[in-house]
Amino acid sequence: MINKNYSLSLWLKYLEQLDKKRIYNLTELKFLAKKLGLLKSKSFIFTVAGTNGKGTTCAVLERLLLDSGYQVGLYTSPHLINFVERVRINGFVLHEEEHIDSFQNVELVRNGVLLTYFEFITLAALILFKRYSLDCIILEVGLGGRLDATNIIDSDISIITNIGIDHTSILGRDRISIAREKCGVFRKNKISVIGETDIPCSMYQIAKEKKTILKKIDIDWSWEKKRNYWNFFHSTIQLYNLPETQVPLSSAATALSTLYYSRFKIKEKIIRKSISNVQLPGRFQVISTFPYIIVDVAHNPNAAFYLSQKIDEINITGKIYAVVGILKDKDILGIIDPLANKIDHWFTAPLKTIRTATKHELKKFFPIHNTSILKSIEIAYKKALILVKKEDAIIIFGSFLTVSEFLSLKI
View 1 (spheres, helix red, strand yellow):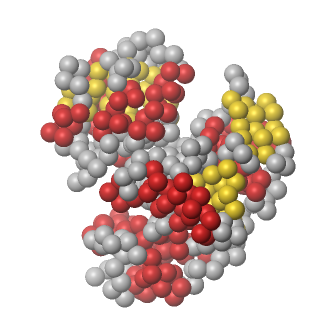
View 2 (cartoon, helix red, strand yellow):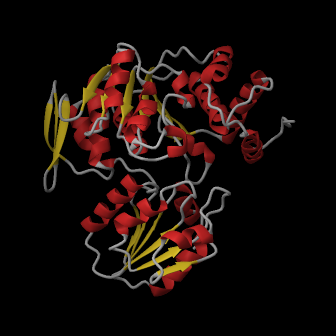
C-alpha cells in the first residue's frame, strides 16, 4: 500500500517490487494511457530505437532543437546517478516532487493492473510532458520497439540507429529477428530514418506491411569523416567542414538527417555552433588525462568495438588497465574480446544487482594470466589506481551500472 508521503526513493523501491510481469503486452498499458489522456499529443513525436547510439542521437536532437528555440521534452534511459535524469524539459531535470505526483497519478488509475517498472515510469513521464507546452517530445525506446512501453505513442518520425545482437532472450537470437522487433516503431505513411548500413531483410518486410517511408543511410542521406572535420549530405542540403563531435558521428548524422525530414527549421549556423558541444555522461567520458581515466557504458560487442576504436584515437603511450562489471545475461566474451589485445590487466568485479555476472561467471571468460577478480567495482578501481602511472590509462566499462557505481564513489 502506497503512503501519500512516500519519497522518490521509496516509490522506486515499490515499483521495483511490482516488476514481476514478464509477458509484454501493450493492450493494458494503452488502456491506462487512454484513461490518463496520454495517447493523443499535440507535440511532434520522435521515437528513437536501436541497439547502440540511441542516447547520443537523442542528445543531438535535443540540443539542436533547443538551440533553435523550440520547447523540447526528452525521455531517456537508463539513468546513471539519479532517476530524475530520465525526464528533461527544455534541457533541465524536474524536481522529485513532480515525479512523485506523476507516480501517484498512475497508481490511482492502475487499479491492480500489472505493469513492469519501465511501463509504470513511462506513463509517469508522459504525464509530465502533458503538463508543459512542448513543440516536440523525444522518446528513447527502452528495449526493442514493438512491445516497448514507448510504442503506445504514435511517432511522427521514428529512428533506428542500428541493429546489433543484444537482449537475445527477449528480442531474438539473430539480426533478422531483432530488426523485426525494433521495426515495431514504424507507422503508416510516416518517415522512418535508418542509420543501419546493413539492413536485415525483415526491416524491408515490416516497412512494406506498415507502409512506412524508409529514409536510409548511404541512399537518402549520408556522411563522411575527414581528418579534422566531416561532411553531411541530404536531399535538401549539403554541409561541408562540420566541426568534430564529442559523440559518435553516426549518432550526430542520424539526428541531423532526422531533423531535415521533420517540420522543424534548423539553421546551418546553429548546427555548426552547437553540434560539437553535445556530450553525454558515461559515453567515453574522460575523467582525467594524466593518467587517462575514462568511463564508458559499453555493454555489448558493438559498443565495445567502438570503445576500442576510441582508445586507439587518443594514443596512450603507457599501459591500459580495465575496470569491468558486466550483467550475467550479456555476451561477456563479446564485450571483452574487442579490447583483449589492448588491456594489460583486467580488474573485474560483480555489480550491485541480482542481474550481475558473479565472480564464478566472470572467471570463465576473462584471461587467467592478467585478471584480478575482486569483490566490488570500488575495490577493483583502487587496485588499478595503485599501479597506474601518468602515461597509463584506466578504462571503466561493461554496463551502465558499472559507470554508475564508479561515478558514485567518493574517491
